[in-house]
Amino acid sequence: MPKPDTTIEPKVTPKAELEKRSRRRFTTEYKLSILKQADACKHGELGALLRREKLYSNQLAQWRKEFAQNGIEGLSKSQPGPKPTKTPEQKRIEQLEKENARLLKQLEIKESCISLQKKALALIEQLEQSDSQC
Image (cartoon, rainbow, N blue to C red):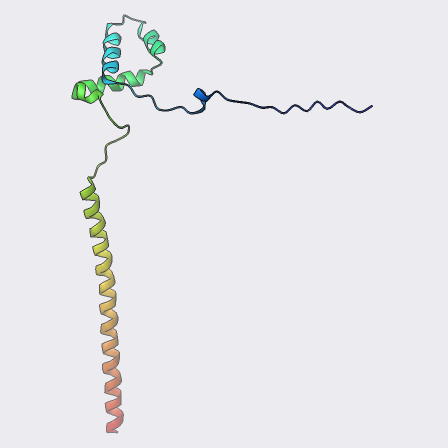
């Protein structure tokens, strides 16, 4: 007796809101309110606040550090990550200096090739003169 066809084709359709996660961005006002709430917390309440707001303790520590260093302006960071160490002008100057060094090296090689050709030509002319005198 043949076995019945029991192949099931799984079709998974993920939820659209879970498909793409983006980085959360916090406003300066939100960060200030969380810092005030965290400062007002008693022993053992801070963890509940962080869980409720879905934050990490290192975020809170970073916000405190930024607020202590630069005040409110420190909390309004626009881009994540470290600041660039060089300005675009400095990068361009560095690029031009590298190109200049490369071209100087290339010029030195070409000048030595020309010098070698001159010496070879002078030697050939000297040999021709000595052959014609003999």
